[in-house]
Image (cartoon, rainbow over all chains, first blue to last red; front, side, top):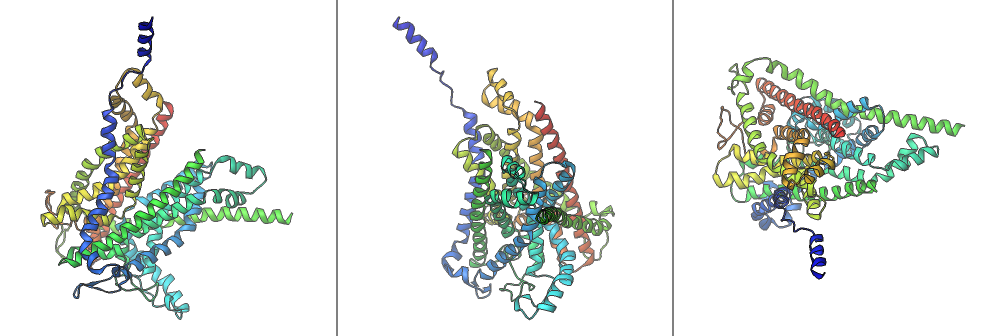
Length: 315
Length: 284
């Protein structure tokens, strides 16, 4: 009897599964992406080290960039990067959220499909094509029709004076166009993730489209839209080629938004192949390090915000 | 009554405004396409443009054959490295992706997608250019592969996820090991979606300039050797656009047109493939 129950029990015990080596293999391979990220930051740190130790924290607030005297400071670059990105965001945000609201609506799928395809193709166009277009078309146009009229009338305000076709402002315009697809696509997804019931309840209470959108949908998608905004900001901060071609490349904190300036990424793009000596390349890499650390932090925050909104929708 | 009229006007106005802004968002797309075609077409209609290489200013018959070849080699090598790795990674996330490790990998990939491409260029320079004391196509491909990898991982994951669980369960019920189910049942079923992701990453890599500036570097001659500096279409656009010679500027517009056409064709084709995939997955 005892032997019988024992054999039944052992038969019921799950058969020992062999270790899933396929799972292990794919897991190791999948780790390549986060590993690459860590290695990139580490390598940049190592390459920037001579400059980090030589200038210390003063590097971040120094305004000089002089390869002759080997004196480097990042502030004008940081200023250019941050201000172009913020202006671009301010220009793109209303357009992006409005487009996301339109694309997230139900029905009329062909019209919406076309609009959505168009906005995604906007993301597909290479940065350098935006650059050449900005250089020959958008820059001169903005100079003539936006910058000159404004600086003629309001030029007595210092930061609106001295129009120039290659400037902080024209760079911001291109950036606004380039971050629009990110902003729209992510916002559309979080708006779609708002539970249908909430919208239906509002409509059942007699709310109009606008009241539903403004008081129900947007507040409940807020965290996700903030996330989309930060993601777009990260893209804008890191954008290199188009900005390099249109910003005018003048290493200064510009007196006016219509003056030429410089961004962190543009300095690297223009000077890195010509940099000699131990300190000059290291200073350029440190600019890249500042850039990547800022964008990494922003991206992590943004992704967590977007996920929290999307996760709530699943409930 | 008046209050309701006000509400009606507000909602109509807001809806109209939202549509107008959506169309405003598409105006730049139209303008970029119109200008690239308008200014690039004169360069592209000359057959020399596709068969010859750079010539000094003033010498007729210049072309971008070397840049087209260079881009194909750079992106080809990058694809060979990034696509298999990315597909395997994506399979892991889709098939076993319910644990903390998978969450970290997803976050890492998404952050890598948003990493400034110039920083990836600096990274490839430090690892593959500085130690060998010369620029090379391989280092450029490495930079591009890093940029392609997270895109392939994430698109593969979502493509594999579209496959209904029934297919996986039938395979397992027949006693197939997990790896055969994943590679021989699920992956072929998800192939159109996976190919879409791979194509999108190829499109993105073909248009990248910043990571090639100090890796692939550019080369005025026709070269097939990836251990040496290689030309690339985006580099041609970038360098020529900033020069004060109208003939070179026209070449830049021509190269830009080739790039745009290439990227748009890849995008539209992959979109078509993906739509079919979603319809098929619905039938499974």
